[in-house]
Image (cartoon, rainbow over all chains, first blue to last red; front, side):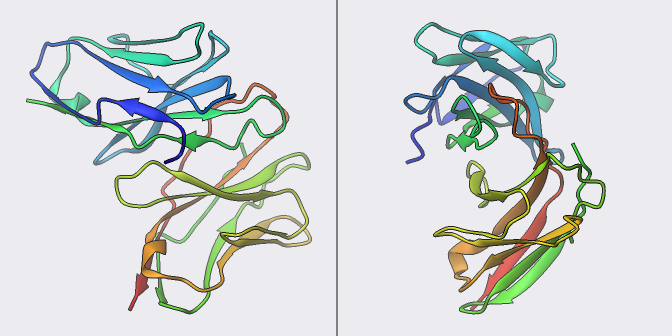
Length: 114
Length: 113
């Protein structure tokens, strides 16, 4: 158990639907990151939050949005789902300071869009 | 981030040392070398990082050449559980709030019985 909790572990839904993926960072970590891993694309950075504020953005689609709440948990919202959104979605967290590039990843949420 | 080059795949016999190379010839003076691995469909796992001195922890050793243009991750006694994709990432660590880590293709290490 890495200390980063992601729910749900598996999710099957239909095209056009909306889902929310949840992430609780490791205790004491202020930064949360979201990554997407499709079969043919490797790990793609989506977005990073630090203490509730968006800090970095990758190739995140406009249909996707995220936020980090005051208790530091984060949610990734995926809407108008397409078949190509089927992927593993990983959340990671890190501390503040010199260890900020040491990320602890969760086990991931596997999304299947039918 | 400095560009890194890793072999796409490597094999290692169980119980032997696995030596995974990474080339980062454009590394700048304040960039660290980070290693992560991903066992199939699991979340990536941090292994080790270093600036210029060799580093060792309970998982692995990191050897960085004197000119810092390349490094080697060493798993001293590889087991079947070490079969994974290994990623070498070069990054400035001074962003105290963290920032994206870019994962490339990595090296698929297969440990054979």
